Image 1 (cartoon, helix red, strand yellow):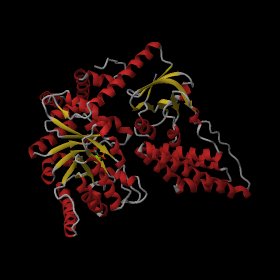
Image 2: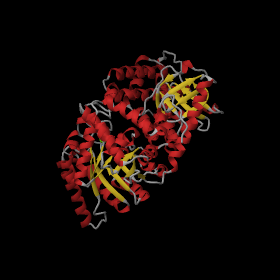
Image 3: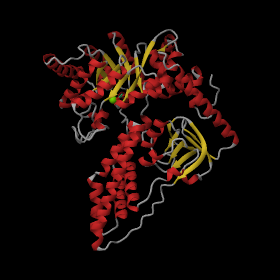
Image 4: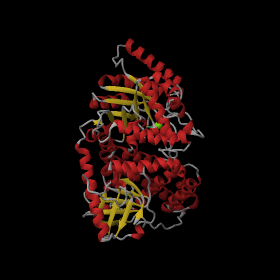
Length: 589
Ligand code: PEP
Ligand code: MG
């Protein structure tokens, strides 16, 4: 039994199919001086061919999973990267070596560099570079990459990694599960597997060497296990777990049209976080009651140039129109930190998490802010559109932003451009200062939305994207929960709506606690999480939740809280939490 990272929920039971992507044997050849330019030409052709393949893959990808097609843009950018191409051509010319060998040397050089860089985000890019270079080498070899089409019966696919085109060539009817040796929670394989609903586990080192094609195998995408050659008992166990999970998922979707109301009639609105306009198509299926967070950065990250006011307006209008009368909260640009744009405001800050991001960037360089405001105001006619400011750390930032917005409203009035005069404004509470002074922030806005992803990072001083300190990123740390309580109390006193749009909002383990804070009006989350959160709310009473939260807030350490939540939630909602434990298989009622 191997333990990895669960990236896509569900259980797959089938025969293994090993996709060997490691057989590229590269030989070093010394070139004749006369052949050098031909070799450079051959290399350029392979680069161009790979670019075209990536673009074709992207076209197919955008039909399947929008987020996945964004990743492919990153790969194309790597192929346009001067360093990769120029460095290899220099080697071919100076060292008179064949292109396959030269690009492998370039890759080695960058791999060494990446390994020495103390930046986890860039280290993650190493895998992307490796995939791109392998694509180029295959084209230099003239290999046909499509051995996946040989799969004609149900299998569990086991491989070192999958290139983007591999992933898209997967015969979806036959690949029941997926396990890879590399990758993390947010790797493209993981995103793709979950978009297609294929149970998946990644990050099991040397897995392929331990398994043979044809071996019976189980992939447990719930708990992150891969089990080759299971015994009869284990197989039976997993068949039940598989059936139970399927039944559980189906059951969750049964009451999707019902609102989330507690047993004592308290209502919570459950909304979706989206990054792209296309995602709205799938929201109804999960029962989303609107969009609580539209991260507009992805409209920029997905493009090669800055989107125009018209581009933004069309995106916002479509979302507003299709969801009307449900609310759509559009967050203004939060560029900076992990979401840098090379064509906008990029700067080499030593500490970008504490730098010019979110509202700070918008106030310092207001051109895009103004364009966003104009597009949002125009779209506000088509639905219940609201504006949300990110990274607020002082109420004065809201005053400044509102004054820019007011200026645009004045212009619109003068030019008789219609918009919703009552458009609501909200602030994200995601910095310690905004949380501590929530009552001051609340004076300037109509609602607040707590961004727990950043709030946790800043309260605990733990970088949210650094694997080395990932174990310290503890959402149930007492300081986080006490801060939430403080913010909820401030919102209750101000009589304004409070929502959670960070990951904690979609974490079923903490739902009862949040409910018990007493003034929970909205939760916004990955739409897949909505059915389970709804089920928990519908099975709970507010009164009981308040006692529960009081008790959690009295506990003395993160450990105590973790243990309490784990035990209590299993006890109170056995059919919802037993699913997540390794060997516990209970009949779903
Ligand atoms: C957050 O910080 O919790 C949040 C929702 O914003 P983002 O994850 O985009 O920073
Ligand atoms: Mg944030």
